[in-house]
Structures are given as structure tokens and as C-alpha cells.
Image 1 (cartoon, rainbow, N blue to C red):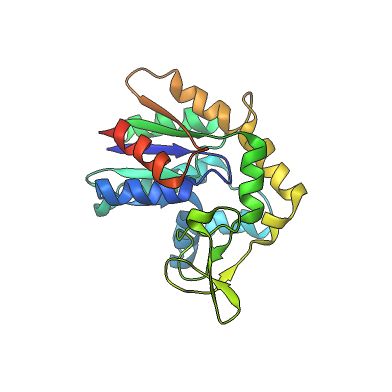
Image 2: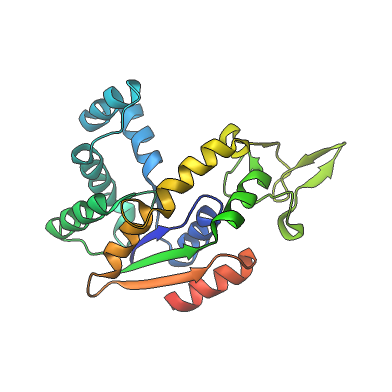
Length: 225
């Protein structure tokens, strides 16, 4: 099964993606990880991408999409994949969709985690990242995933590892900038989701992201079947 997953920062998209990955035994592929891997390996596309990144520019789609396709052709994607973090706008959505079709691949399902913008912001400011695994959920505001205290400090509730915060998680301006991109239904990520809603043959799973991790997961996995 080939899946695209969408959700605003703070929606628990990474956590839910990991749960889907484990159930269906498909790789959870994050666009940022593709860049880092290609650059570290010194691939031709990676070096082209690096030249843009080093200048602080966005990597053009004609570099990004071939990098994604190369990753989706790897052997661990034979049974399917879960792509996270791309596309971010309708033009990218259309380009990716067309490139996948030319490569003989289809998008079977789009998972959209729907969450009110203000709730998403609150979730971001309270989340803590485990230094061992970013997908270990920790949040100071939610009892179900609250970090545990050890020797006078809060540590990861899953593995006991140290916790950190992303600087931009505490920066309201940065949060608003990220959310401006996601919630823009005309030129942003929500517009990319809407593009796929208009494509025949693609299942759209729109799931309320407000309940607990367990409830959201149950809804997603139940609909996927």
C-alpha cells in the first residue's frame, strides 16, 4: 500500500505514521531524511540539493521529486511506502502525482489528520523530543504521554532518555509561519491535500486529530483495514 500522510505540526503525524508503518511493514519515509541521506552519500542529486540548501534556498521540485522517486524504488518499498513531508503545495502535489504515474507507481491512500490550528499550537509548545527517538511521544500537558521524573528531571516516558525542545517549538512566530504554510487551502499544504481529494481512485482518510493518540490510531488503522 502506497500512502501519503498529512497533518499540521502538532497533530501527531509522526507518531501515527510510525504506527501505520509497523502494522503494514512499509517504510516511513520523511522528505527531510531523503535530503540528509542523499547529501551524506554524495549522490549527484544530493550535491545539487546541497548547493541550494547551503544558500538558504528551497530545493527545486525537479531535484526533490527525482530524489523521492529514487528512494521509493529501493527494495524495502516493494510492499509499499508511507511518504511524509511532501508535497507541501498543489503544484508539488500535481508534479509528484504525475511523476509517480510515469514511474508506474500509484498513490493508494491519503491520510489527513485534521486539527484545529490553536490546538495544534498548544501541542507544539508542550511537546518534548526524546534524544534517542523523535517518535517517542512526550508532552507536558497530556497525562497519557507526560514525561516521567527521574533524579529531579523529566525524561522520556518510553525509554528514559534525555528530553529536549526544538527552539522553534517555543517561538510563536516560527510556529505561525509553519502553520501559515500548512493551513493555506489555496496555495499551501491543505491545497495539496485537496488536489488528491479530486483524483479518482485514491482513498482519502480524514481523521480527527484532537482525541488521544490511541483513539486517533484506532480510527486510522480501522479505516485502512
